[in-house]
Length: 107
Length: 121
Image 1 (cartoon, chains in turn orange, blue):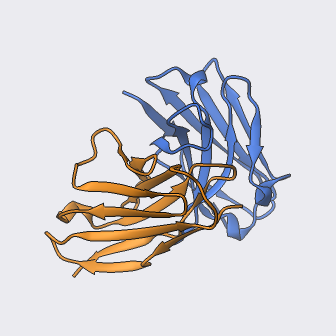
Image 2 (image 1 turned 90 degrees about the vertical axis):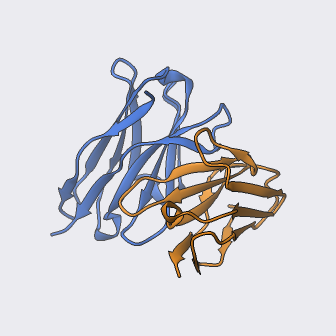
């Protein structure tokens, strides 16, 4: 099975900051990587698929990059509604697996 | 609009079974694989398995083999997840989630609202 490791586990930032979250796969997954945002009590929401493709309706301040084993999610200018937990997911092979999550908190 | 609507919260005793439903609408039900993912309180996301609504074929995570059964009813565009021999560690929110493409492990673009299952004596 492919293990997904996110860093950091939590990060504090201010509105307007640029934030980057990293996800590493235990083996190569090409560009089969997705990013989700989850707010308390809500289902996850797809932000990015295929490592860098923006899901319809997602603001352009979110972007993704990477291929192989190393990936990043960048939020270019944090907005108040962006404070949430973010998960990566490898979509290359079964079983699909998630990172442990990164909690983005207000500084 | 495209949506998945799940059944309501459940409270079960250890050893019992639970069956959660997920009704799809707004798209062709048989054209998209469906996954089940769970999330224990304060924890991350855990993949449980997948069902092909077209033919009914399934694949389950090793951890749940022998305890989970996923089925579908094409007449009502509904998928079901039944988990048996419940224990306290199964207390979690259970989500159904649609795959965005024909590549079965691909990203999940539509999620149900979640069903809280509590296992307690």
